[in-house]
Amino acid sequence: MQELSAAVLHGRIYVAGGIDRTDHASAAAFRYDPTANRWERIADLPAPRHHMPLAVVGDSLYAVGGLTGESFVPENTLWLYREDANRWESRAVLPAPRGASAAAAANGRLIVLGGWGLKRRLVEATAIYDPGVDRWRDVAPIPTPRDHLAAAALSGLVYAIGGRPLDPDRNYDVVEAYDPATDRWTARAAMPSRRGGLAAAVLDGTVHTVGGESRSGVFANHEVYDPTTDRWRVAPALPFARHGLAAAVLGGRLYVIGGGPRAGFAQTDVVDVFVP
Image 1 (cartoon, rainbow, N blue to C red):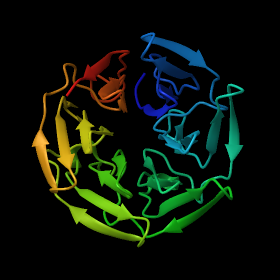
Image 2 (image 1 turned 90 degrees about the vertical axis):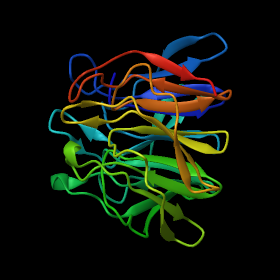
Image 3 (image 1 turned 180 degrees about the horizontal axis):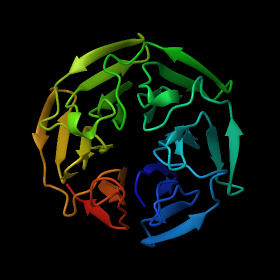
Image 4 (image 1 turned 180 degrees about the vertical axis):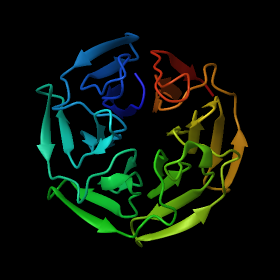
C-alpha cells in the first residue's frame, strides 16, 4: 500500500486506506500488535480513501478527509474508529474538502494542516476539531500553503514539515510551527533536504522525518529535528527508499510502513524499524 497514514492507539499501530497494488483507492484498515509481531485486518473504512491522515485524540482514532478515485478528488469526511465495536462512525464534516494534508493532536484537539481542496487548489486554512462538541473551526492559515506535507505535535505545538506546491519537483524544506494557545505560526529551521511525500513521528522528544519523492525518484532520507535547539541532524537512512509511506512510534521504536518504492504509482508491504 502507498499514500497511507499511521497512528498509535492503546499500544497498537493503525493504518487505513491508501492506494493498493491495483493502483486503486482502498478502504482496507489494519492494526499491528508489536507484542505478537502480527498484523490483523479490522473493519473497512466506510469508503475508499488515499492521502488521508490518521490521528489519535485522547482515546479516539480519527481518519480525516483524503482523496478518492483516480482523479484524486478531495473529501470532507471525518470518521471515528470505535475500537470496542470494530466499526467506523461519521463525525462532523470538515469545513471544506481536503486531501494530501497532515493532521496531529494537540491540547485535546485535532489539527489539520495543508493539502489541496476542490479544483486542486492548495488549502490555506488550518482547521481545528473539538471532539467534545463535535465541531470544526478555521484558525490562522498556514504561512506556506502546501500538499504532501507531514505534521508532528510536541509540547503543545504542531509542526508542518516539508511538502510541495502541487509539483514534486518543487519540494519544500520549510518548517513552520503552529501554537493553538495563541493562534500563531512561526518559522523554524529548515530541513536539511527538500522533501514532499514524507512522513514524520515523534521519538524521545524529537521529530523524525523519513522518505519522500520527486518526479525522478524517491528518498531514503531520515532527518531529525530537535525543537529545544531548533536544529536538524541527519540520521541513518531508510534501508528501503520510498514515498507516500506511514510512520509511527511505539515502544521507543520508529516504525516505517509501506509506501511507494518508485515515483508515482508503486507499492510495498515493507515495514522497517529504527531503534535509537
